Structure formats: C-alpha cells, structure tokens
Amino acid sequence: IVIDRHRKHRRAGRAGLPAPLALALQIPDAGVVRALGLLQILPSVTPNLFASALLPLSPLQSAPISILYFHYYSPTMTEVKLAIYDLSHGLARSLSAQFLGPAHSIDIVPHTAILAFGREYYFGGGIQNCTHGEFTAYSGLMPIEIQSLGHTTLTRQQFEAWCTTVGASDFAPESYDLLRHNCNTFSNVAATQGLGLSRGVPQWILDVPGRFLASPMGQMIRPILENMQLQGPGQVGGGYQRPGVPMSTPALAPAPVPSSAAAAAAMDNPWANITAKTTTDEIKTPILDSHCKPLMSADINTIKICVTKLVAAADGEESANAQQILDELASLLLDPKSPLPHEALEHSAPFLLLNLAPESSQSMLNAVYSLMLLRLIVLHPAADDGARVVLSEIIGIIGGRLIESAKENDDKSKDELFGNHAVRSMAWCTLSNATGTNFGASFLRQDLALRGGLVDSALLDISSSQQPRVEVRQSALAYLYNVAHDLAMCPKVDEIKDELSDTVVTLLCGMIEGIDEESNSTARLRRLLIVGKTLKPNHGQAAGNIDVAAKTLVNDLGFVEVIASLRSNNSAGEDNDAKTAKDVATEICMLLS
Image 1 (cartoon, helix red, strand yellow):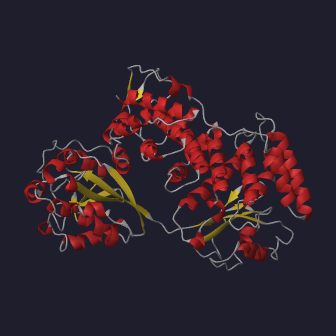
Image 2 (image 1 turned 180 degrees about the vertical axis):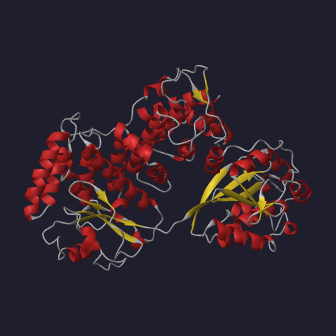
C-alpha cells in the first residue's frame, strides 16, 4: 500500500515484490508505484536497504521515504476448528466418579468433529458431513467447546476427495471401534493428515477410552458407550447422500434445518441458538450500574516531557523539524475537546509511528513516549475526513503490531519492541482510549477481523501465567472492558440479531477462566466488571434487565462457583479495588441466581 501526501490509498500491486513481502511506505509521490516495478526485492530485504534502493530512482531522488511497517501476505487459507461435544449430556461429570472411582472419573464422554469450509465432518456410520446447524438440530447436541486448530491451504474439494478415499478403507462404516477407531480418531487423523495441520484432537480426549478400561467398572460401561455412536443427517465421504439414521441415544426428533444465516452463525458459535432475551425482574446492582463509562487514560501532564525527549532523540536538522511538528501537536492536545485537523496529524502521526517501526533504530523509551502522545491523539475528535483516515491508520497499525507480536514466533522473528512490557502496556492503553471514543468504537465495529484479533491477543495478555507484568494485564483488560462497554451500549452489531455473539462468549469465558488466580486487585475487578456488563448490558433498557443467554452460558460452564468464591476472598490490608471486587462478585452472583 502506498500512502501519498493526500492520504489516498493506492494498491501498488506486487510487480517485483515476490510474495510474501509487501511494504507500507509514507512518501510524497505516488510515482513509487512505477518505481516498484523496477525492483527485484527479496523477502529478506531490510527497510533501510529497500529505502536505499528506491532513493536513486526518479522521481524519488529528493523524496523523504519512511518505512512504517511490514505486512506479510499469506496464501488463501481456510480456518479449521474442532467441535467438542459431550455425549453424556453432563451425566459423566456427576456419575463417572461413582462408577469408575475418583481416580478414573471423567468430565465428558467426548465426540469430536472437524469444522471447515462451512461443513461439519465426523465419523459415525462412515464419514459424514453436513452444516453445523443441521447436525446440532438433528442430534440435539451443542458443542461444549470449539477450538481453532489452524489454517489449511487445501480446498474443500481436495479434503473431501481425501475423505472419500479413507471412507472406503481406513474409515469405512464397519471399521468403527469404540476404543481404538472412533470419531475422535477420525478427527485427529483428518486434522493432521487430511488437512495437514500440526494440531489435532487434544490428547486428553484420545485418552478417555483408556481411562475407562483402567477402572474396575470400565468394561461394564462399554456397552452403554457403544450405543452412543453418532450417525447424523450428513453425507458420506466427499459428497454422495447417505440417509439419516436416528441416534441410538435418547434425542429429540430432528428439528427443521435452520436458515443458512443461522447455520453459518452456529458454525462459529456453539451458543448461537440461545436467544439473547432479557428478564425484566429487577435486581439492584448499584456498583455495577455506577461503572457506566469507558475507561480512559487522559492525563495531559506528560505531554511536555514526551515532546522534550523525542526532540532530544532526533538528529541534526530533524531535531528542529521534530520540535516544530510536536509543539504544534502539543498545543492541540492540551485542550481535551479540541478537534484535530488533518494538517495537525499529517506530519506528527508519521513521526510518532516511525518510532514504532520494527526496524526502528530508536530506543524503547522513544516508542513509549510516542505511544503516550498517540493515546491522547485517539481521544480527540477528528475535524475532517483526512484526520479520520489518520486515526484509522493509527488504530490499524498499533492493533496489527499487537496481534502479530502475540503470536507464537521463534526468537528470530519475535517482535522485541512490542514484546517490551512498557511498550505493550502503552499500546493497549492507546487502543483502549480509541475503543472508548465514538469514532474508534465505530471503526472497530466495521473491522471485525481486527477487533476479534485484538480481543484474542488481549486475552493472552491478561493471563498471569503468560503475562507476569501486571501493568500489561491491566492495560489489556482496559481494552477488553471498553469492548464490553461498546457491546453493552450497541448490542448485536457483529452477529445475527437475538443471538449470543462470538465476542460475548469469548469475553465471558476469558474473563472468568483463571480469575481466581489473579493476584492483582485492579485486574481482578476489571475482569468482574466485564462479566457484569455482559450479564446486565446497559443500552437503554429498563433497569434490572439480565441477558438470559449470557446467564445460561455462565451457569452451563460451571463458572458460578468460581465467582462465588471471590466474595469471601479476605486478605489483610486489602485496597479499595479488592473490596469493590468482592462487592461486584456478590452482585454478579445475584444476577446468576
């Protein structure tokens, strides 16, 4: 992408740019589109070498060039997910310890299926496939979990051809064996061999049959499980129709097949069929109700020191230029209500973003100072369309870096800048501020892929086991809180109406999981507030309304006990956030009762 002086985005094409490398440049002349065609760039090229190669080319001989960031393209890929069901409908958790003994008890009787290409593939009476909605409607089962296994470059036709081949041999209907060759075996082989993924079915699922037989009563339960083999409404192998065979376990008669839109939603969201109704029974939650605004970091006392440090870090003539650019910006930022025109951001935003570039020679501190100013920029309303484009770029660039740096990379490709705790904390602070504004929230509602990626990355950063720095956890939670606030104020913007959204499911599970292990009272309070906002959204409805779907989810997943335990978590000398967290936990338990 080429960003010219008018902030118009032009696609440069990739002539001379072998995949997967493409670059984003800030240049004053879109003539670089032609110049790119003259270059032969290797994927290992550095930004400095790239700039050096461009400078001698007309019309760029006198053009200042800055490499803002790299973006790596990937081939067209399809996400593959694993749907995990409990064939016992919850009975295994309550009864298995009695029959098998505590040492051999299990939580579920697992059935798994592969979700890909808009279809659900599973082994039961042969390899079958149908839409996820068709399967759940026919079987009366809903997944207890859906895991992402990765992305495949195979097409649906290629995968179904593989299914047809193994469906006539290794996974023929008569090859089914409860303990050694079942639905979970197929899902594992389909993921690792059929789709070429590195992840398959979790080992604990594959080990369930062995745990049964290791118990004295295991052999007695085996006949019961044999009757639980799933035979659904799907198609065998890659495409020919197989008549549906009723399940041998008690189940409801096949329900009408849902609409394609509903089936598509259910494909990604196991609770998509739960209507997000509210109850009008009034439950007073004064503490939750008092948290009715986004979390913002609006301190302007650091503006002067940030400008001073960034100017001091600039060299020679660039120092004087930086002084002028940042002084003009600072004068506007000191007035919190002052709209920012495009002219004020045209030079200052690229200057600040350049300090965040992966190959930047500037220090970590300069990145922090730049982010401290950017967090204030995103709080201001845009005065014109040009300023709105710049604000969008700031959110997109910082968000993209957070997402990429959260991925599991080897040391050579690790983003050291955004792996720094101070930089990462301030980056989350910047996006939290952006999400708390009307423009930023609206922008992220329109770019659901970016918002979803940021939610996933933030969830990694709130785990005390993965992120030991409390300031990073707090900042990531501030972002998630503002996402929850936006969802509560503007519900059902990214999902089919009247259904529990993927984001809500992710937030609820992510906030409650591990909350009892969070030692920081502020982080624990923010987790609870997000749960409370989701259970009792505040979007103009009558006081006391509760989202029944969210309540059902929390209860079904057994999270009530976890939240209840936080009410009596007493400690000497606890601070205000710790006391408030206990009160919020009490209010949430009232909502869940």
